[in-house]
Length: 498
Ligand code: BES
Ligand code: MN
Ligand code: ZN
Image: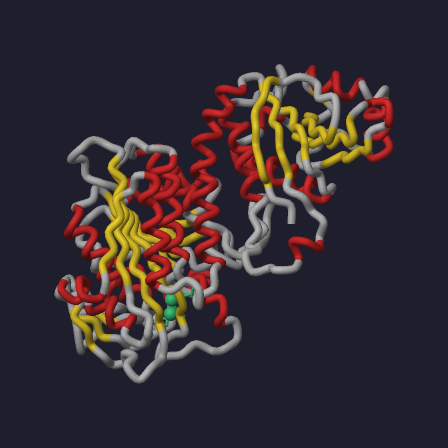
């Protein structure tokens, strides 16, 4: 598979050789420099467009082998539709689609003309978004492919982006590149199989953020026992691999400002435990650390772009296995908060991990807000499919900020309700709370459970079981793991906490 090896920005002029990509608005409207490139084809573009019925419609492509005399090898004309209607989402998707076209053509080097024109307004941010789309599209999880790399003949692609303001575009890309790298980090973590990525190995990945200036602290079993995290430890006790709690701190804001706290479910593999899952599709549960991966990816993005905010990431890392020492249905544990939990189903383990991670985070760091991300329930897939993550919150203002960040980042959220009556569904005669809420509204009862461990901090829970992996492939993601959440969390911090 073609990889995006190098990206550079330079001043817009008409490229004289190689593979060239230009943009066309509706009515085959080109920018002035693109017009100059097209004129080298001596009417060939107009003729080809007529024959192919290409008019510049949004997302349409005209891919031409250039005539010998023109100097260039190939001209790819990319349709924009109505430029005034284009959003950041569109520019990102265009970047992905253009990369796909170049990949199909096995191009080793290409020049993209993003000059803009009177009609095609192109900010540096839009250029950066375009490049992000190309970069995310180029991602493939091929770590374990030992043969294909030599066989498919695809070379790495060098992309030159020609713009009016290379300096400004480079700066905007600096920010977007940090975000893209965060998304790719999250995808890699989710795609990685559980035999390779256990709790200890995952914690090491979090530790690597120290390179970016993040302070990282790893708690082991001993420390967690001391903190009385029996809910998290109860899940971990069926695995021979010991649990970890990783804490990442980015202090980019004012000293003393209460931090934004991000908390992630990091179940490196979820067999269901003694309440074991059916075999079909169980391999997908290597992705049950998608929440933790999104938190690590977001911390990477935030630190990588040197955000002026205080942000803390906390991830609970365990493996849920059936074993002679595994916890049983009916067991009662006392969480760090002091609340007792009756475990009715050992497969409802994510909330147990988060119960202690959330309590610890709010007690130790007194955050301004606290957001957890978790591949928590199959029920959220029933409700929302793969296209929206479920949002739950005890605070309307925080929910609204998240909804607007979701729109701006292109990572959609849909709010679902919490209420006293739903809360009753996790009461039990045997303890303070039970870890399942019965057959119906499974995502809501899971969220009600979590709310009891958020302790009145403005808190939101994102159920990403449908969006973290297995979503349909799209312009910017061809991988099973999507990296969902990284762009959303980064956007929230950028828009509201810097
Ligand atoms: N990790 C699963 C949820 C999940 C399912 C994530 C499908 C991604 C895709 C979670 O730990 C789980 O097993 N939840 C149970 C809860 C039930 C036992 C109350 C579920 O959703 O069935
Ligand atoms: Mn489970
Ligand atoms: Zn799980």
